[in-house]
Image (cartoon, helix red, strand yellow):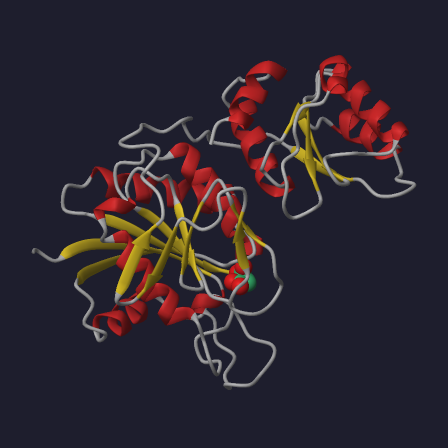
Length: 326
Ligand code: SIN
């Protein structure tokens, strides 16, 4: 078997972070360059030849459209390059789910595209970075990884971009997937898929726009301040995602304010501030013109709504249809 050729796109995060001591609490993300990663992984003797592009070296809380555009263009070039078999993206864990969904919707699925991060910096005792990275290479070189959309590899598990979210603030088992759960188990020496690919050789669902329109997340809480919604509409927000209670609920006054926003031409998507569980359509959605986020949490519902609006999809029924697809 010929060696798989994997292109690594580095963006920073804790996986590239250093503390300067194995036990220090504070550390700086984005300290290790792509050459160092590649040199380290090559010493493991994995059956893959790696090349790399340094896209950025930042904490993922600072990821923005400029980085996303560069990441998308470089990933697309690698997908189109017959010399490349798979792509690994190193990324901070805080916004990994947002980048993963954005790329999932805007890249073709012909080749494996795998996002990987770490919860502990490279020089911490018990660092998970190199193991996660080795696992990501194992996934990216596997042909079975294609046709599943963008994947996230963390803690010896493989998650689909559509389902994954960071659910724990610290510790190495920080990612969960809902509703499907993880779709494979991986170690540096094994890979076991739990299901068949579901999007074989599909084109991108949407082109990546130059800019994403402003979409706000409104967090529902008891006795919430509802004036915020009218302020957002006046400020020019193009869409609102409700991080609702339970199954996307909100106090009556907040629901009324959101219905006013829809009447003013601002689409509203109801998601949940709870980590797991579907937000399904309910009868009031038809009257108010709301969209139900289904399994997407607020941060990812916002990305999908931004992408739809940027591509001219503003009709609530069409937005709902996009939220129903997996
Ligand atoms: C970040 O998201 O860049 C910092 C946190 C992490 O990578 O775990």
